[in-house]
Length: 408
Image (cartoon, rainbow, N blue to C red; front, side):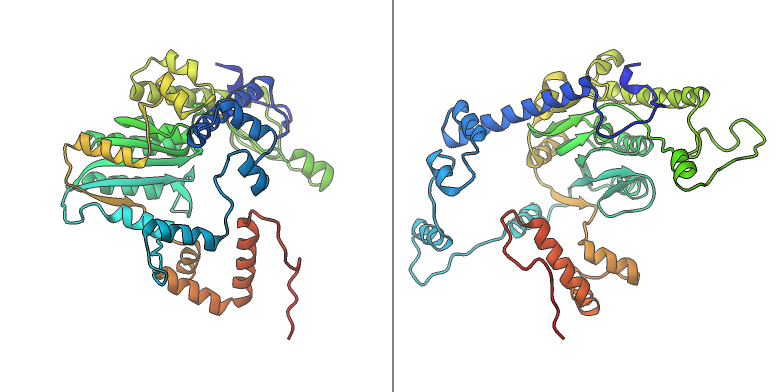
């Protein structure tokens, strides 16, 4: 087993990093940066050296420097941009520009796929950490996703599945459960295309590796085929800081479990934990080897927790091709042998405020109604959340009072 899979029984501090890990991260960042530079240089019709110089000198820190460095074409106010658009559209002075917001455009685009067709291509969005248990907002849970995959498998109208993964991973056992359900979907004659977003690493790659085809973005963070475990130890906190001492009476050596947060990990316990880590890692390797038609040792060479960009992952065999979600849908349609289909998406994503109120009331509520109810019942909290949202989203210097002063 590689060194990075060994159980760490000594105190561990998060700011410590091995030279090997530091090298891997530096290599990944360098590769990602080179990809960004290449794309920007092509888009701005400049050399890669010019773009690197602009980045080195922070030449985009204000509009004048950005213009001088050819990072932008013009400096205009909003009304001037609108006038330029009107001229391009040959609109009269009193005619308005028909703008469509990005969210509306995306929604329309997603549904403008032949709604009259009976054949369906399912798109399952696997977004967030992978965890066990019931549905949690922004998480991939086994209860929710296993149920969805079984529903898709039993739907005679679904002829292909696109698994859109944007996940850093999580629970290895839950990942294996979802992997199993995906294999059952394939065994039912439904081809599966994995489409990787920003991140599809570790458990995120685990659930994708068994697909018929894997499509990643060039800058997708993927790979990270590895396993680790965290064992918290509160002994020093309890004994030295709180003055609380814990003792046990047990009928067998492991009657109170293999590990406890109140006792240090001994050599026997460490060996058992290592056994579990090793076994899980071997299962992970076997899943990837099976899905990618590789040997266990070949997978191990590119695994061991290493992360790769989508471009490099294609070179080493972890993905099949580069592309976006639309490319994945086209590939799914090709495998299904149809060009007459409609998209059905899972799961239905709810606004966080809507989800909160539904949890509180036990009723399904439209987003607009949920927002109005919250604003009316909790006006101070609603105002505070609005201010917090502004603080988190703004990318500019802020000119406002650093406090709220209610006058009554």
